[in-house]
Amino acid sequence: MNSEGTALLEPELADLEGDDKKRLRKEKKRLYDAERTLEEWERYRALVDANDEAFEQIDVTNREARFALILMGALNAVVLVLLTRADALDALTSTERYWVVGLFVGYVVIAIAFLLQAIEALRPGRFRPRLWDWTHGESSRPAGVRYYEDVIRKSASECWQAWQNVRLVQLNAELCVQLHSLSLKNQHKHTAIRRLYTGLRAMALLLGLLMVIFAWLVWT
Image (cartoon, rainbow, N blue to C red; front, top):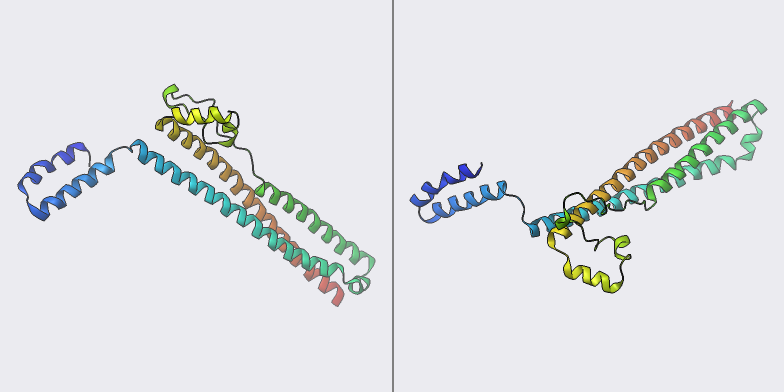
């Protein structure tokens, strides 16, 4: 409901008393809060919450990458056990050994690609907020008082002076730019994680195929 709709409640509010009047006043305030824009302090708290959520998402992504590395370690342990079965390898013909070695080489290639993708998923990344190309006017231009690369460009005295002069609208603008930067970082990490688990699935399938072929060759 817009402001015209809330204005229609004014005559009804004047005719009511007691609890009904309080209830209608609360309803009017709720409708007003739903339509109005955020105040600067409300916007600040919302942006801080959004940045905290973005940092938490980065931590979740890092934990997923570490879990994938643990699974990779378990798969590699199985491969190591197969490679130490020299007696089983001796039972194979030369042609069968070529097949088994070829599968092992394929597994190693996928494992190396998996490891590189895990490094890509876990690396810190570099998504610095772009404060220098602000196009919304000087009055709201971010002051560069939050992100560490902007802070270390100043001396300690200049940093303190910047905090003395910063306005809330500038701080909110900087928080918004930082949120955009963290969102880019999260998108990059999510893409790397999807590729990482795709590689893990390929490793598991290849290892299963290798074990089946290896057991069949030894048995026959």
